Image (cartoon, helix red, strand yellow):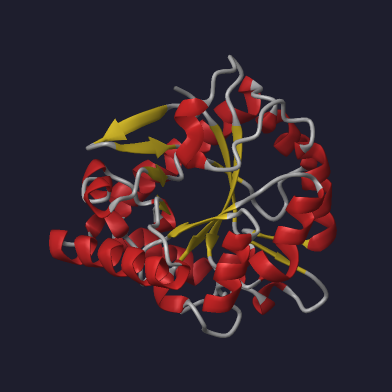
Length: 262
């Protein structure tokens, strides 16, 4: 079983990147301005099959892998900009929400989350507090992050939450292990692969990251299933993974210095 999932975060207009989602230059790397995202949506129209709800992946019968669009963190632009633009093109998004940030300035409110769901978009968990290194959490902390997030979002929606994504790219098998027991059937990681695999009854999917300056041609090529852009991301991602494992907290400290956040 294979799928092509694209990982976005936020979209901003004239108010600038700090108007939605997480603030700061590091987070801004993942945010697109409105005109750039509009071009991406147009390019994605060429995708042969659309996966508007990842929980229906097993119903897919075409030989072409389906394409899913995901948005991490839960920034307010999901409601103010993104949803309208997707719907005009016939798409629905997967909005993965950091539950502990719901209702904060620049993040979605409970009412906005319910509205997105009523319009056919998928709402999922992006943990409760967005730990810097999810895979380094103790088992008790990891279970609490998922449990508290799924409960809060399920209470807001009035229905079970079935989808989640791992914050920060820090995935390991034990990160996914508690999810099926909480009713979550699909988990997005940040690994750039089309491969899907099972962990205790939860389907785990990779994703291809879309950065602020990712060319629209690259997005179109990814959606079309072309190998070259997938391989480029895989090489870069594996290099970062080694640096993260070897560097640990030092890797994160270096990132903060680079972006002037210390």
